[in-house]
Image 1 (cartoon, one colour):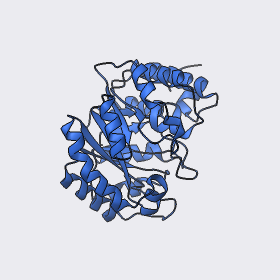
Image 2: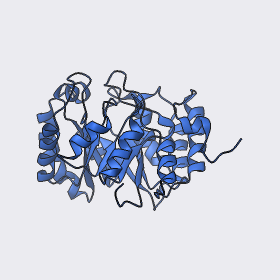
Image 3: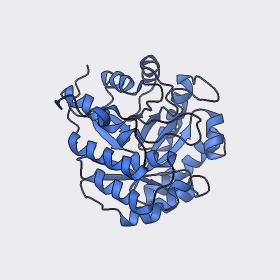
Length: 295
């Protein structure tokens, strides 16, 4: 294990989680964000500013953000697909902005209706716009560990994208395991060639926690997770299942790593998320409770 003592979790249920679920009312989204804000989570991906025809679940992003409680100790971020989205996020007051580009050209066309190269050109123009507003830009490289349309993605392709956006001035890099194709071996292969600040794993094939453990051993200390395990990618068939925040926190705390998150409070929010969505969520820790809970 590396020398890490603390791990940072960005809670992505309000955006990445809800975008792959049936739409819920604005009030329910606000309740979820506010409840998460009370768990000790220090980073929350709150909304995305996308065209409502593309992601109808995010059509009320401005209203959700206007009504949500903003706690000064929490860093809230928004995802954007393009320049128009960046302008909306800046106008709404966000100072941490994320933009996504797929390592897979096919997935990028399905997700953003343009090639990877075209998205990278757009990001080149976005960076000064974001920086001039006093905000930071994180570039999320989707399908970093494989594409449902193209199959394996060469680490060198991901590395080339990272080199391009870093030279353009991107503040942070994240790798997304968009359809849960990562395995510990694939994590080692990619991270031995290029290193992000943050990793976003799905548990689609049951490897989410193993991949996080592998990345921890390689020194990565920032991860995305979604309370209850809700969400996925609406443009990637079968890609349900973000790794559940309470499962990640449960594992990390038992390893003696500090997240700053109250696990019991987090499980309560997972229970709330089930009620808001009206369905059973896939989290094992939600079902069984922490290992310290005795019968």
